[in-house]
Image 1: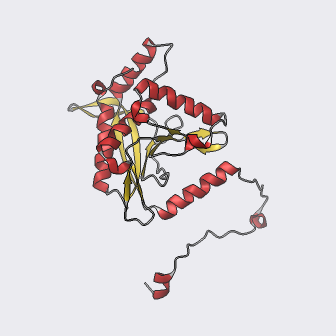
Image 2 (image 1 turned 90 degrees about the horizontal axis):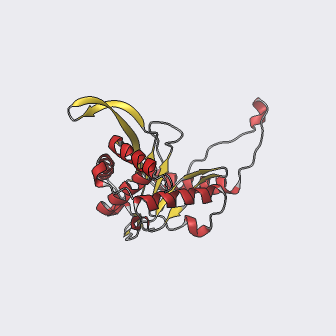
Image 3 (image 1 turned 60 degrees about the horizontal axis):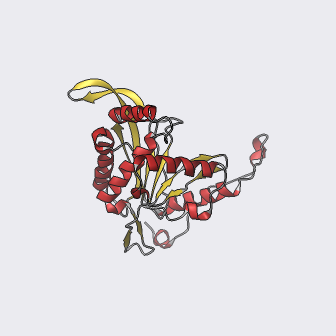
Length: 253
């Protein structure tokens, strides 16, 4: 490395040119939300060393219990798979507090937060918006499911206020209704981790010593490697995975 390389702090930029030289082009301005999201994602990607750990959880028993509960409570809030994943992440954050933290500006201090505000990434007509569910750990599964549904509807209808999007400590983003087997979610800095969820599917896996069809949900945990090591990330996602697999540990109310 040359001395000029060591002293340079500038970032390379992507070159642009007159695209119409090669054919017809439509120029479409980006709306304000897309511009803001783009700047934040670029800042996170450029400043935070991302690593993504992929795993999958067996939710066969949990899905059966969830469907039974929804069928027997037609007038109550519908329990979604996402609500259980959020609850499992909350348990993981309490077990591994470094994931519910932010790194100080100097990189010398870690702020461990004793509150649990979960960002829920929502796909809206205006683009990706992340409303924040405040004090999520104080809610039951059914209360959390109702709160997530209400926040998502508020986001899609364009009725969120600034207070609805601030103060997050950890984010969950799900592509489960769309598809895919894994992806790399970008951390919602200054948070230090984000859990991505892909579509659950039935697949043959080893279960209790035999090959059986089980419902498996892919999990993708991106984390800030300045704060979290790979072994700790593996333990965190393993904790969440095991929590989801144990349907007997849930109170469905």
